[in-house]
Length: 222
Image (tube, rainbow, N blue to C red):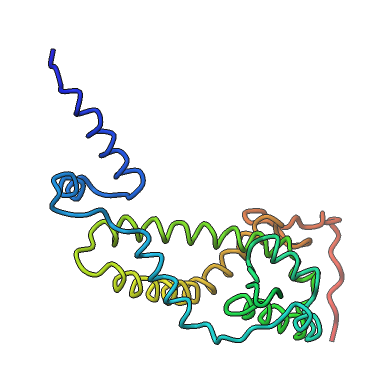
């Protein structure tokens, strides 16, 4: 039987916390516990991500009335609001939309005007799309915290900006690479579920010939 100091209980709890909340490997946790290294700063990473997002913000702001007057669908705008995909800013007591919110609404509006009607791309389908991308973002951030933040020895802000820009580009490129192969697989799976077209003989089976009457037809004379 071995006896341990009661202080080890707090130490073990701290180790578990660093593993659970910061995804740190034991080698890094050892340095943190000894004071040779500080815990990666999630707030610093969040500020760096915000800087990357601000770079693509054109600074234009539109009111709800202006959006509706330009052709935005009020039901879809409210749906985006409920889902949290758009978050208007309050400017002088009035709600204004800008940045990625404005870009998102414009992309959907352009698709509607081009002929992608609501029955073709309903909000229920968009909800599935948002859910799938949400899982992708969660996986991305977990990998970032475990891979970059846990091992960062340089400026966390700089590394975060580089990783954020890289991940956006990777998502676009990987999606482009997967688009056609995935479509081919989806088509094959749909064909397998529906089965062969009517009238098509099944593989391995030969067509039966009509039974012969036994009588020979007279040959044509020239």
